[in-house]
Image (cartoon, rainbow, N blue to C red; front, side, top):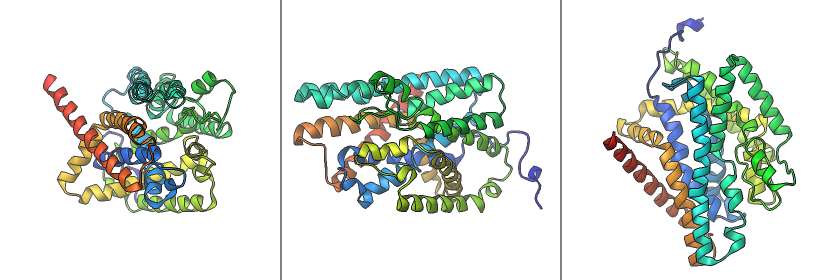
Length: 376
């Protein structure tokens, strides 16, 4: 029987870029314009058709933000600046950046939309919710601040994992909260899932519900960076985990529980996902581990040029994310709405629009990366 010490060491030996992690980050980034264009341009009826369902639910949910969070947790282990002060500082920067992004992707386009159309209810009423609401960057920032604090007070990884599990249970118990006061709903939405009947509150990734996922990833990262042979780590067990998750997903879809509980509106349906239950978060951990095994197989046999493409997407993840959001909102909420009086499109046109936005975002990010290198 193989001993633990036969395949893992005390020293960090498996350092440097990990191709499977680059692919795990690349897939959600490539799919972002498709997911968000589907959300912006599809009606309640068309969003459950096969192609919109593929991007909105399958790629946009388990293979999207949860995988990104998992990779974020692993990256803490691989970071060259792994100390409490640096982690908390990076978290604060991300948290602030989230609001700056909200101004860029919502504040500016919505004010332009109001100027062009004069429609107060569509563009002015929701703008405060949009600017101060919670999304993945704010979640990432709060996660790093909290994680850095827990490390600073010298809690071991097991205790941090237990705390994150208890946080998830609390988040599950108090999901879909309405405090009856809009500013309170917006502020508390960063920590626990809140909502209002008007559907404007953005409480997309509250830290209580989701903190468990990057913490579990951090613990896995400590194994990954010390493993002698990644093939022995990933195969054959991890692909089996992927199968287990997708069976769970099929059952969840069939019986309509967890993130597939649905709702009367798109917002209610999405909040079943955003205000995640503990069982769903655990299932995302299983999914992430399983998909890393599959991504390891893919990148191990993929041409080098393809792996370099995945790496370039992964390396520019933040730039692509920011650029794509501006063009998604500006195109759908302002330009399309001004021209057609609606932002709804046939599915095939949504796919073409999303592809164009991805290409603009990707090559724009590469251009910014080149300029930055020249300055340095």
